[in-house]
Amino acid sequence: MKEPDPSRYVLRLFVTGQSVLSNRAIVNIRKICEENLAGRYELEVVDVSKHPEIAVAEQIVAAPTLIKQLPEPLRRFIGDMSQTERILVGLDVKKAGT
Image (cartoon, rainbow, N blue to C red; front, side, top):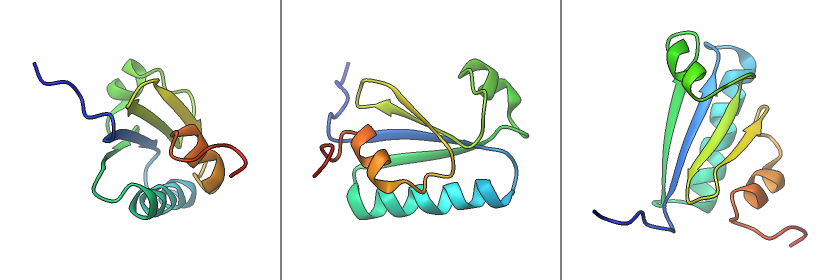
């Protein structure tokens, strides 16, 4: 079996419909990924109003929520993804304070 590529990021963004907050989170995380992980990420956007079973399985309690599945460790971020620095540090793309 093929080992996961440690430089490749697998992300899932859970949103609720086409709300302003959901749309802002989608735009923000796509911008962060394109500027910092270009060609090294997969981003799946899941609308919990259309796929509640996935939200239950992933234990989503608030939306928008971003889950970094790979590389490990798994991490979760809640909000509109506007805090770029916090997201980059949490994704281990950037060290805190640099």
